[in-house]
Length: 348
Ligand code: MRU
Image (tube, rainbow, N blue to C red; front, side):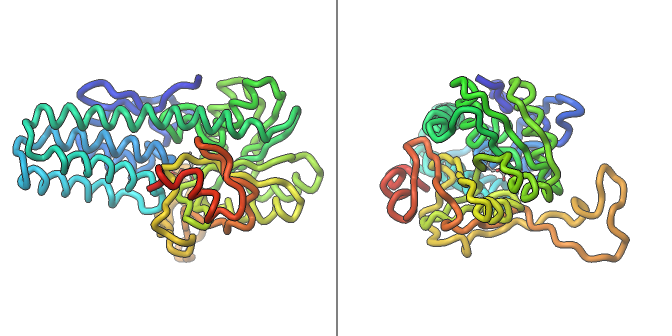
């Protein structure tokens, strides 16, 4: 099993700062809602499931800071829910985890604050533990698709660093590796935040899983050479019809995989599925600071005054996706039926 990027220490959470990997392995403490919200906003903590888990602990600290009960308690608690909701708009796991905590808080609002806080703490710990179990199940389910000696391409980081531990797309890769399938991984660097180069390569290399980093633009050229057997990526939000929002560049990776007849899979737990949205057209896409594009390590790359666009996610249409690997099994098209059948009772 891989390391966990977040550890609950009773009065705070300890999180590995993902903005400085691989140069440093620095752990940060967060013990208030504002510290948790800041860590999510600046992407010290990132990856859809981990954002949700971290926010759940943010609400544990919120509840502990509120002495009152009843509607007075809920009024303050809801403000903190709102602070956390406004950190990042695309990954639905954030809203799923906040809603789970809010529902429990509403149910327990009138009881003794110490008992209420204890129950909320247990709920956040459950959210974390369940995520690890789901990643292990996704790994087991997805590894069945992988054949001996394959090279798998991935994008961004859907690994231990993005979850409670083990990962989703990298969970499948880990399970295939542990099963002795002799796989290799190609990680796209993932401009502009470089989660592939900085995070995916770091965590796979640490686990002795062979990984090669390529510039994003090299993927089609490498696929054409016949070197890639499969693509597996994670997701930030999957709609009822199987459209998938994931890190910017995922859509073009799916298009070039299809052009080269290479299977394209998405791996995600039920907390990433948003049955309330019919299609990906309705997913809010985060637009991040232009500076992520105009500068690199503080050095200016783009002439001052030149406009840039920096959407952090894109939506891959369901018809480019060969399967969606979940903890409950593998969904295949048409996703409107298969997702409902597999996850209907669990999905958000
Ligand atoms: O902006 P990020 O780094 O939070 O984006 C992360 C991704 O796009 C991941 O692929 C996704 O959250 C799945 S993580 C299991």
